[in-house]
Image 1 (cartoon, one colour):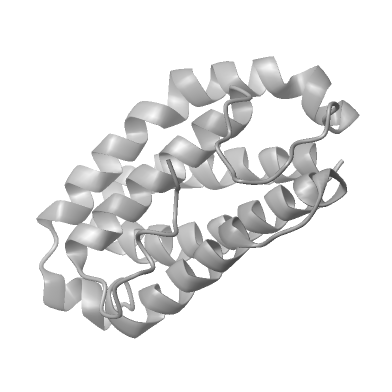
Image 2 (image 1 turned 180 degrees about the vertical axis):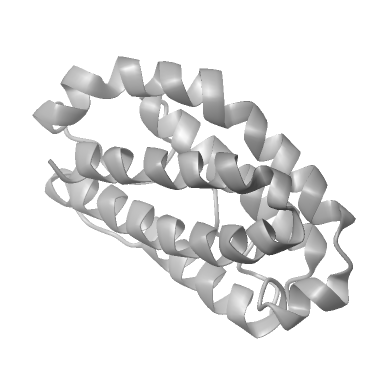
Length: 164
């Protein structure tokens, strides 16, 4: 099942697409850490050493602290008026460009040697896109401020695990 390619098919993403993006981001991170990533690329036999050594601990943190918070964030986003979302670039053309970039990376071709660099690029773009969602959300829902900080701190080590 693709993560981002279907989301990028529309040209004017709305609040539902933003909700679906958050779900796709959660699935991508979970599948990456659970070694169940479903990309249409040949995967090499070995992962980066740092990823292999710390993946299980990182997955445990994800499952304990991050996974369920995605649903809470989605519920919070669902409660925000769509005009407010649009005013902060969380729908429309800006979101479309970000989804298109993620979809292009997901669909890009290459052999097994390009697998982990591609996953790293997807993670970098996912990180950027999540920042554009989380930064405005911290002003709309200050009660999530602590979690948003924790969530941002969680993503950086995941990127480092993949990039070695």
